[in-house]
Amino acid sequence: MNTGYVTVTPDYRFHVSDDLFDDFHNGREHERYAGRVIIVPREPSDRPDRELLAWHGQAVFRG
Image: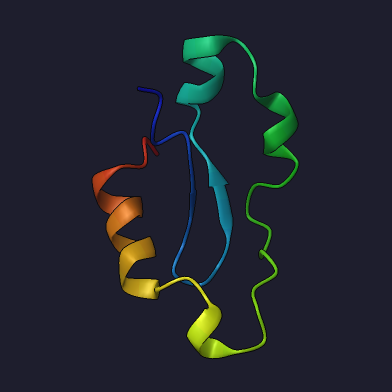
């Protein structure tokens, strides 16, 4: 399974692992979005859970 190549931080910023290019020799198009804030729903209850985003960044992301 190919997981952990991208993540969203608890402050809703998109990040791309260098491993994406190293492992697949592609993914450079994702880099232009690196560090950018993603658009989230206006309603706080509809937004991604910040604790789960933090978990993903620590446990799954290859960054």
